[in-house]
Length: 156
Image (cartoon, rainbow, N blue to C red):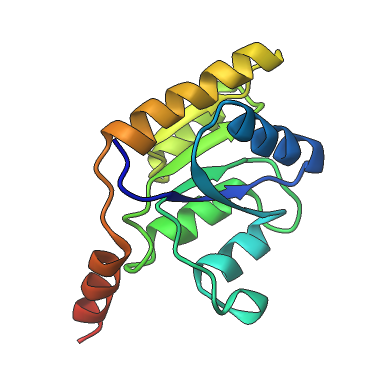
């Protein structure tokens, strides 16, 4: 059982899909703190706590779309996994693409899993319930305090 809300960053350029994700999480009573950004540039600013995101809380898990404007999910994944302070954050690619090339590329860049967005609402709700059960309840994620301590130790 969760002892705290899981901080989730949703990187999704389609406002309707972001709203659907938020509403489905609420309808399924999946307790997370969901923060949303619309593109890869915003995602990196959020993760690096730059500009408008200077006070952003580091996410425990990232739900990342691949196909976005400005900076796509592949670029975000590559930057994220090459950053010593961010690479430990699990990234769940959640996208419409079922391309073998996209799947292989995502895993080569360090994705922790690759999920194809289902078409139906019931299937989408079931997918989010599965994510909740596994990633937000079974998987052990480091606490924010541990992340901060580790990051400051690595800088020395």
